[in-house]
Each structure stands twice: as structure tokens, then as C-alpha cells.
Image (cartoon, rainbow, N blue to C red):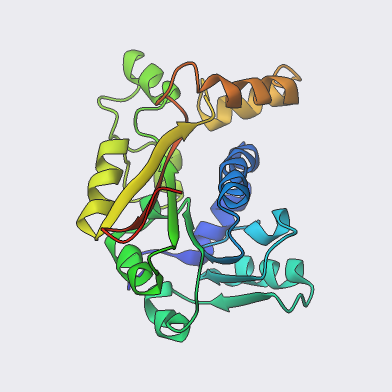
Length: 254
């Protein structure tokens, strides 16, 4: 099982206490919601919803299946769903329950903020592949090893290379640090072909420092919006990277 070496309860607690992660998650949701609107996806599978499932940000969809291993996160998703018959919450690992979903049709599979946390990220991708048709788009995103703030840390001598894990990463049990080439190679090895990739949200400093700037009122919403838009001027240096992809040889660009 892909999460066998992880303490899920400890991860949930660390995630909920993580400074600035709420803002980072909001930026991540902007990318995902934009993709859903652009592709007009109606049938969605979200693998690992964390504290804020994607259906909380959608109105027009036919079905949303959420597979979440954490008990607290799964319970939060059930509460947020409020009995909506379009939404199904399954607590467990996708690798263990993918057979239950084999007959479903999904327009979009979201593997958001997850691959870097797994000791064997290929396990999730292998579980996703049988759930995809030629028209299914798979979206993955992870923190960027070559983000602006990590490159600054490198030049300051705080890390010796961009792949080095931080104390925050260790606290959140994050097993891997990806740059876009590494993420692309992983996806290609598992039988996917990229249709689009990029980075988003320029984060000049580490989470704790960004949270401190927020707390003193310096980092306001207008500046956050500006940092989100800034990536188009310095592409590739965003705090997180993403790849949209399909089963190799089966689909066209969304």
C-alpha cells in the first residue's frame, strides 16, 4: 500500500497546524477549478481531498467521488457534502478500492498535492490508469523543487541543493521533492502523456515567513493575487507545479 509508512493521523494534525497552508491550498484550488471550468468536466474523481474537498468550490457537476485515507478529512468531506446525492465519500486508499470504481466514467481525475507525500507515488498512478478512458484528463500537482523561495534558500546557504527536504516537509512526512522534469518522468513511466504543464503562485519566502507577513498586515489579498499573476512573467518559478495528462496515445489536448 502506498501509504503504509505514513502516520495518517499525525499527518492530518500537522497539516491542520501548518502556517500559510490555507493560502497555498486556495491557490491550488484556483488552478484546479480553472481546469474544471475549461474542460467542462462533469464527472470528477478526487484522490485525497485534505481539509477542503473540490466539490466545495463547484456548482455545476454531475458526480464527484472523493477517496480520502484520513478519517478526519473524510468525515469533514461528508459533513461538507450535506447529503448531496451527487457526492460520494470513500475512506481508504485508492490502490485498495479502485476495483469499486472500475465501472465508473470520469471526465477528470484529480491527484492534487499528493504524489510528493507518498513513499511510492507510482502506486497511485497505477491505480488511476484503469479508471481512465480516452477522454479522461488526469491532473497532478506537487510543490516545486525549483520555486523562487527554494532557489533563494539555496543562494542563502540554507539548503545545499533544491532536492533537499525542509523541516516542514519532514513534519508533513513528505517523501519526495519534484521539479517539473522529475514529475514528468514519473508520469511518463506510468503510461501517461502530458498535454499541459506549468507552475503557479510565486511565493518569495517559506510558509512561516509568509504567515508572519500576513500577521503584520503586510501581505494582503491584493498582494496575494498579484503573486498568483506574477508567475506568467517568471514562468516555472511558482511554488507548485502541475501536469495535465491522458493515457498515452489515447487523447487530445484539453
